[in-house]
Image 1 (tube, rainbow, N blue to C red):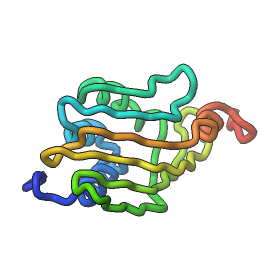
Image 2 (tube, helix red, strand yellow):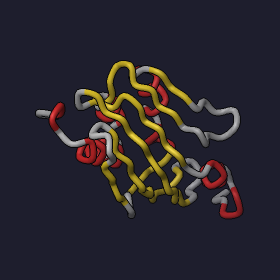
Image 3 (tube, rainbow, N blue to C red):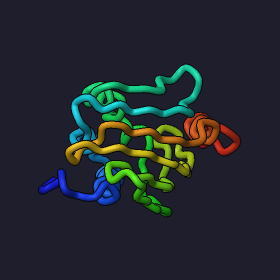
Length: 143
């Protein structure tokens, strides 16, 4: 991103979500610093909830589009904070789980810290029960 060191955190966060929606996981990981820390405090039990380093985060995300086809972000609100390097997003994703045809509807709260125009901390909250229901059969299985 050109002149990213002077780009407001809110714009950097919007760019990261646009890149996610475009299913460009490599491009998304390149928006992160080498020493990025990503945290998913509500990750389902048994799932990794913290990733350290760009390569570890990319390894986690690279196959995401082959499991969930996110078609849109129906809601997106991005907020600046008192810290010019931090932005918060309230957003939702709408799509389909590729393996079973289930709808994927998820709301997120994301807190992102930037340094020199790159993501250094990414913390995302979402509903693990809704995720597990979409990924498994749930009551709306296409099996």
